[in-house]
Structures are given as C-alpha cells and as structure tokens.
Image (cartoon, rainbow, N blue to C red):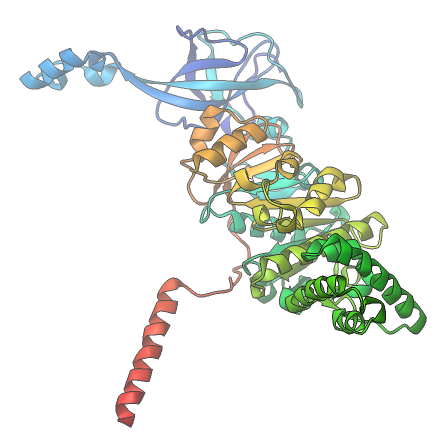
Length: 514
C-alpha cells in the first residue's frame, strides 16, 4: 500500500499539508498540518501516505492563526484608526493548523508502530472506512453502539472484546449512561444465536430498565421485584448470617450450632425453615437458659435480619430457571429502601450466579450493575460493603468462566479500584468533577490530558470508548434506541402539579362541608 491514497468514501480528497514546526514535529508520535477549507474537525481521523503504508492519526487540536492580528499594540492602533480590515487583506492571511496524534502505520490489515515521521509537504487525506475498521479492530457482526464522530462509520465492537474482560460505563448524572446501557442491552437481545448469545442480568437500582417489559422486547424480558425476593435460610452459612447482621463472636459460635441443626432437620424432614422458626428455636433453647449474654445478642441479630424481610424458607429466585441466552432479567431494587437489603441481595445472588456459571448450570452472562459505587465502594467499612467482595471476585476471575461485569457509575472516584482496574474496556460520557477525571486518568490506559479536557465538554449522547474493545480511543455518537422504554417515575412538573391539585380538592371539600 505504498504511497496509496485512502480507499472508500474519502478516496482522493486532500484536507491539508504537513508542516514543520518549532515544537519538533513531525515526529513518530505527532505531526501538524495546515488545513485546506473548513472540513476538518477535532476527533477526526486522517492519513498520510508513506513508503511503509498509510500513517493513520487522529486530530487532537485545531488552532487558527492570522499574522495581522499577532501584535496586540498594532491591532489596537489600526482599529483606533479604523483601517486594519479595510486597508489590508487580513482574510487572505488567516489559516488553521491541526495537531495530529499518530496511531500507527497500516500495512494491509495490520497496524504497526510508526518508526519514521511523515514528510513535511505531504498531502493529508481523510482516513477511509476500511482503514478505520482495521485501526479500530471493528467487527461487522459485532454490537452496534453508534457512529464514529465526524465520520459515517458504524462502531460495531466485538462482543468478546467489549465484555469478556469487563466493561465500565462512567458518566455524571444526566449524561446518558443508562441510555447507552439500554442500547447495549438491545444489541445483546437482538443478537442471533449463530453469533453467540449471552444472558443479561441487570441490577437496577432506580427502576430505569423495567420499561423493557413494556417494549418490543417484552417476550425476552423478566422483571423480578426485589421487595418480594427471599433467600432460603438453608442455603446460608452462619458466617454469611453473621456478616449480614451486627453479631458478637460469642453469639456467632451459638449460631453455628443452630444453623448446623437446621440443615440437618431440613435434610431429614424435607421441610424448609425460615428465620422466624430459628428465632423461636433460639428463644426456647434450654442450653441458653444460663447464657443470656449469648441468647440476647443472638436474638437481636436474628430479629434484625427478620426485619429486613430478605430471608425465607427457600430461594424465591432461581437463576437456572430464569437466565436464558439472549434474554434479559431485571432485578428491580427500586422497590427496596434499605441499602443493607440491597447489598445482601446483590451479594448472595452475585455469588450464586457465579457459582452456577462455573458448574455450567446457567449460560454465559453479563451482570450490569447500576450505581456500582453503592455496591463496591472503595473506602467503606466491611458491614457497609457486603456486595463488594463478589463484585471484585467477578472482576478478577469472571472472564475465565464466561461471567462478565458491566459497572455503571457516576462517581468513579468512589468505585472499587480493584473492580475498575479489571475493566479492560471503558465507555466514558460527560464528566466534570475534577476528582473523578483525575481518577479516570489514573485508572484507564490510553487516556491523555487532551482527552480528559474533551470529556468535560461532551454533549448528551456522545461518548469516548477506549481499551480492549477498540484498537484506539474513539469518540462516538451513540445510536438511537430501537425501543422506547418507560422509566419508572413521573416528571417533576407532573408530580408538583398533582400535589397542588390534590391539596386544592381537599380545600374545596372542606369548604363545601363547612
């Protein structure tokens, strides 16, 4: 492909000329070019033909210059006289310069490292679609997330490259992260069996995905009301119960004996028991008559668990019966107020899903965790981070067994560093918090200062994809949803209007009565 021009939609078009600069460019990592016309935008991919093959790069900055306006005192004087633009050809001296970060040299379909700088005076051309597909390692049969910014190329990423080594979607509130997650779920539900399908489990903290049940995907969706979920007591160990409640070491030793006896009884009678039965047995245990310092704390801990209404006689949710390839299971936590109960459900069923996947009892799956920083907080006491261990375990070991994670967070600085660092692909939408930006810069490979600056100015629906999923960091315009899902909850305007109308009716009724 020596000295060849780009193929595809942009064949033959020159957008500028490479120049030498005082900054020491061109070099193997960067070059600048004078722009011809107005068609070049920041984030656009370009190429320069070379003997080794097309050198591909991305425009990282654009500056505009005009020598007539370089000296402030001269401009001020001429403007005072009103003769600058009328007497001098100022428009003819205006030009724009683009700074380009080199991505590599394309040799056939292989992208190699640039070992020589491009030559000054060479024509710069738009990169063709075929070149970009090779550069970004796109997959024609992959997941369609949108189009490359300033191009028409669909960004279709490989399922394995995006999810097998885990994905993090990071953005401030209102930037479109849940919308993007919905696009990803649509792609997974639409995927044909011959391309390989996985099950999708969403830990839905605010009921943002329950609307899938009312969409065109309703036949592929099951919504589980977390308020009605129960964990079978016989499936739990004394250590888990102690972890989920505030229990002393002495009470824990007594609990061990009661849990062992419960499991023995259930095995013999085949009649499951719940926490209510255990409370009664502890209360009537003659062995504890002289150990009120044990009975009291143990009963207090068990009553605490009973009040959560999370433990029952048997499991109400059985993943092996629900999880199917190409189908979505939404665990709706929006009906639960207690953060501890939410943590317990995620911790228990996260472990159960992983354990059953390792045994081959359920299909490969991705667990999408909304508000992930609430379940795997970096700096949190153990009793306030009950789900953190399983999320970190999945992050470290899940890829070997086909158990993937998609962590969604608006506060990446609060998210477990262990979990975030194991996400080899990242999709970042608009973030302005400097602490979050700094954390992202330290946690995500391939992101530089210019990209961090660009993240703060992204519009809703624009995202930066980087990591394993793509061969080079890219800015993407997220595609439109194929389904219009209904999000739980009404607009603030409607809630306020209904409140006033309700109060007005009450006042009218009182006045009529009087």
